[in-house]
Amino acid sequence: MKYILIVQPLASADIQEHYQYLFERSPQAASGWLVEIHKVIAELSEFAEWHPMAPEAGELEIPIRQLLHGRRGNKHRILYIIRKCEVHVLHVRHGKKKPLAKDDELA
Image 1 (tube, rainbow, N blue to C red):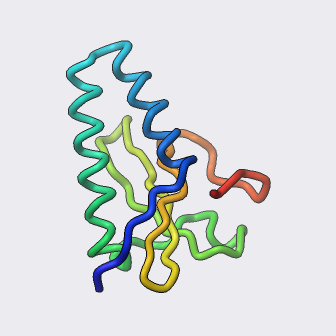
Image 2: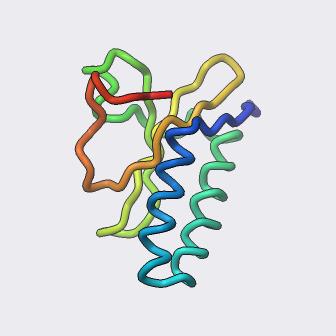
């Protein structure tokens, strides 16, 4: 199924924050990461159902899925929900960050 992809403002802010972090260390690496993360997110429009529920989905009682992207020490969790014909990307978090909690913003 083809989904409409919606990247929420918090997810965009997460991407921008990590891009800036990388850019300060290596502009070339930052550019490469940005291209890759957008490519992977775009693929959710076709393959959103392929990825498992996020570990915190049960506790939050929200069917949040996660797509892991990156290498060992630099994995990112792309957290999203499927609503009818839409995929809403909620956050793009570094794998070392704590899981989402009930008081975290989602949209």
